Image (cartoon, rainbow, N blue to C red; front, side):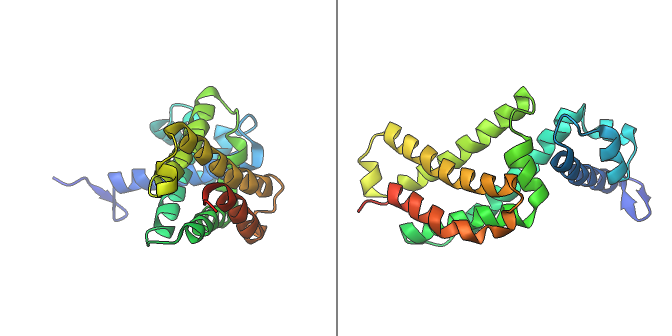
Length: 204
């Protein structure tokens, strides 16, 4: 028997919508207040749910932050993979990836602030999630390097270090705009960052 519907929606659908609202509200509150000053009462008020509903989805504020961060990670991953789905020359691939990252953060400045500023050192679990995000980004670049004969001849360690450096160049440039409230200027960093990364990754 299907779940009983209320206002045309099943309990499962209503629960999913509640979670989405909590994540959106958490994103906004964490972005505005920072982790330490963010309050569950404000999150539930913005999400238009009760504290009881909050605790049906998250054990505590930290779990909410991690859920927001995970949502942002999934969106970013989808944007990057979609951007480079077609075969591209190395330099154009780098430009496309830089653009995809910066554009995706610019499309949701609150999420960008949570992922690049608020998350830093918020809790041990949050810091682990942030470190893992950077490691995943580096692994994506490292996998791409393995496509090219120049990098296949290099050691795994050298590819790894090059990938970390490339990831950091992109992440830090975007983080600077986010932290200063200028993420709307994202297009201004695409060419400079592309040149820096390409210089390090594409053999002369």
